Image (cartoon, rainbow, N blue to C red; front, side, top):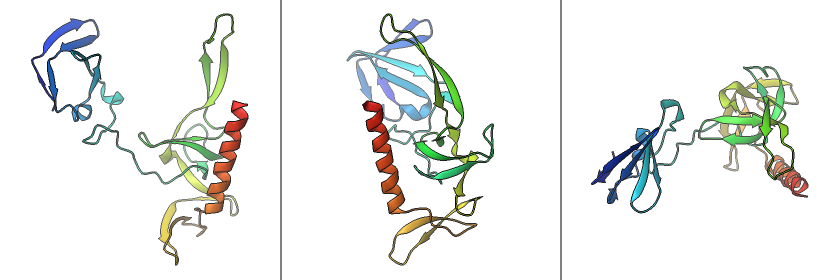
Length: 191
């Protein structure tokens, strides 16, 4: 654990401030469920996080990123939850908690405050995350969902394929098309 020398604790409701002169070995503090915030040279804020707020961390205090069987642009079928049976395309990945956002699925209502005075607030519909274990890759051609497998082609490239159909998912052309579409959507939003 982190060694903090010459601490003087000052209690404030809901927070604990520590006045310290010297900090050593603070890189592993994240893995013990403590949040360390440096306010200035002589004051730090040390908060204990709840078990469900903690992220599993590596020794360098960065969160552990989980490997997922899906990637951006994959067509997936939701196999559990409210959206069960629906088919969509993955538009965003969150590797630290293994969740994905599927286009037009798991729609949530978000109430947004006005940014400027006199401007009205808004009610916005946004896609919520779905855990990656609740989606399976889907073949549009054969209309079947399947688990994913990995194999090495003759040219030495490693690709993913659908186990049920044998269809290869990873295509450079598909990836280029997906990134182009993403750029065009961003340009439309900015304009």
